[in-house]
Image (cartoon, rainbow, N blue to C red; front, side, top):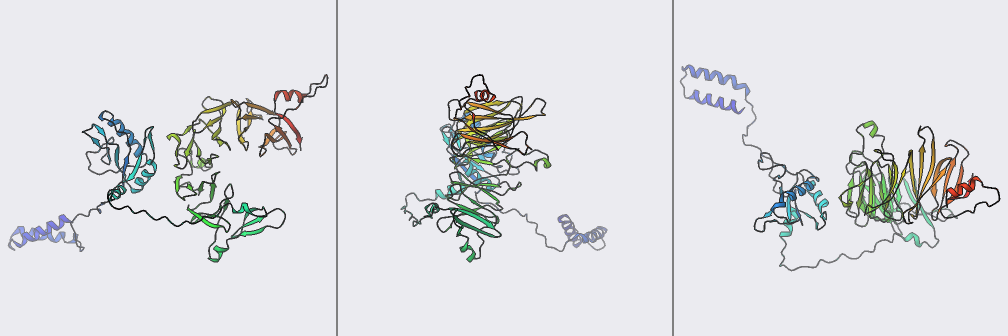
Length: 539
């Protein structure tokens, strides 16, 4: 269009300076008539339209407390820091920036003091988005760069605010907020009738009731305040905390609400859109929500109950956990998170690894996962920071059950197993014993049989004893407190005649000393050491 306008302008201007009889003038007039149809009636603004100039620095981060190194180590430090910051998000790049290279982009600056021949201990980073910059401050704050340096990460806009503070001005002590007594979340324990409480959902209603097992249940709270205000205090699902301090109600359109105290007051609300499942940590310090959305990178969220702060969010599946085949991936359930007994660690199984996160920072323990080739299942001890996991035969290695101490990663015990089809692990409530029900197969893989591997965790060397069971073991469980366990077994899994047998890890039964008698039960007692049937075949 600009060319057509110029041509027409040039022709018109030329025509005005030529005589009417001039042949050249006639040719120009004819050319102008041909171009007349190309013109637009819309006004033309030839000025370039640039994007608005971004004068903020909200995409910039200042990283301090880096090591101060001489010129000989500058390149190595630059590469390490660049690798660290680019894991969080892509750095800003600009068209036509010929000075930028992959090893030294212009959006990354590591100042160097020529006078002292050393770096100054900080770096400036510019990300493509403000979201990545904010994430960088959360991830890098307190990051253990090496044994002597914990990083500090601050948004550049925050440093400008700090620079404007008048250090010589009069400091005014902020007045503390008036004290507000929090509800006693263990109020129900002071019930004079020593009753328990339970919750019931029916229709759209949710009610908490007292129960003593003798008289009819009595309503404690049924959301009367919320009903009066025209609000439904629960839309979907409820959950008690492990010690009964909190009562969680789920409202998928908003999140999770915690209630507690004598009158079930609202204690906190945690935003988690689409939530359909919650898990409390054993000591009630943290709350984990899950919306089971495979496409949501923040499907699982971990909150601090005391502060309400979102500590970290996770996708439903770890990286590289699902197979490439979509139909096969759809059948695989997400691996669950598991808490340590003291709330200090949160762990999840990945492909050939266990990722253990420290609380409250929710950072990966020692910045690396625990390598566990072929892992199928893991569990925390209920009374110690010990992880038990089992793995089938993998890469020419036999199947095995391992006990790993956290955070030292020390392998306390490994038990190799052969011809294993499946294992099921069960911890005793006090963490004194670990029982592993092993389903084995013959070399032909046509016949299955069971045995129990019993770990005495608190004894030196963690001795392991094996209990052979000829029948098919259908269930295995420890008594709540003590050294006994029980198994359900039958001649085959489909049998209608099921036996219950109890065992004691410490009880010894004297063998029958009658002359000339050496029963199979006696020989079995000798083989099983102290694992002797206390009660046998109780149908």
